[in-house]
Length: 115
Image 1 (cartoon, rainbow, N blue to C red):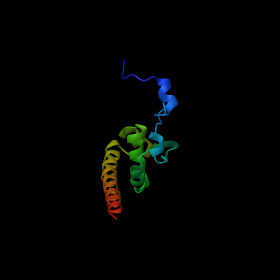
Image 2 (image 1 turned 90 degrees about the vertical axis):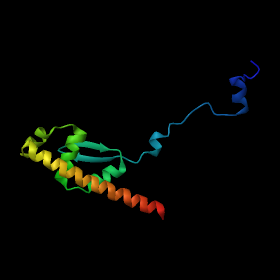
Image 3 (image 1 turned 180 degrees about the horizontal axis):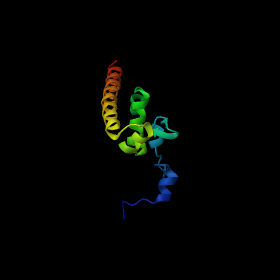
Image 4 (image 1 turned 135 degrees about the vertical axis):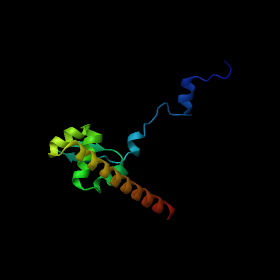
């Protein structure tokens, strides 16, 4: 009991502010919105959004529909008049290109940090 301090005493002495600020949203960049077949797709990660925007439109759309909207290859194929295997191939090619763009952006960020 000898080490206890009343909350009233602490508040009157202003040792601390009895509150907390959630800084999660302060650190976030403004999300990027992609429009795919009339659907808005929100990408919160700035580097990912930048890398996606570097892709050709069809590759970008296939990735966004598959990974963000949740369409399967068959459904995407019906939208574009292509078979499932063609969409699967295009998605894999798009992923490889996205990875290269991601690594390029990462390299540029590291280079900028060293200067």
